[in-house]
Image 1 (spheres, one colour):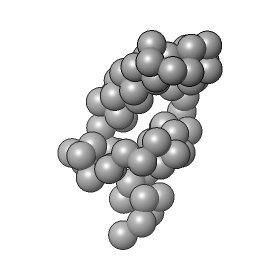
Image 2 (cartoon, helix red, strand yellow):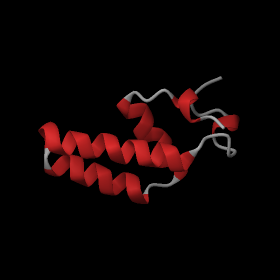
Image 3 (tube, rainbow, N blue to C red):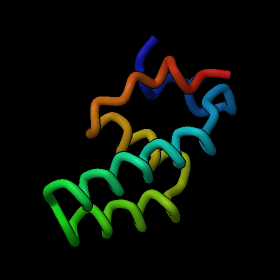
Length: 69
């Protein structure tokens, strides 16, 4: 089953937890090395749609199995 299979987008993912973890990740990046870019990514995660959150998580190498309900 792929990251973007039907079951990944039908509510089986805990998007609130994924959003919070992405915001934490981008916040840490902001503090450690990317500065404004991390802040921008953090703001993007805050307002992202569920599909955008999945794309961000993929880009950051998140294990989406951790977010399955």
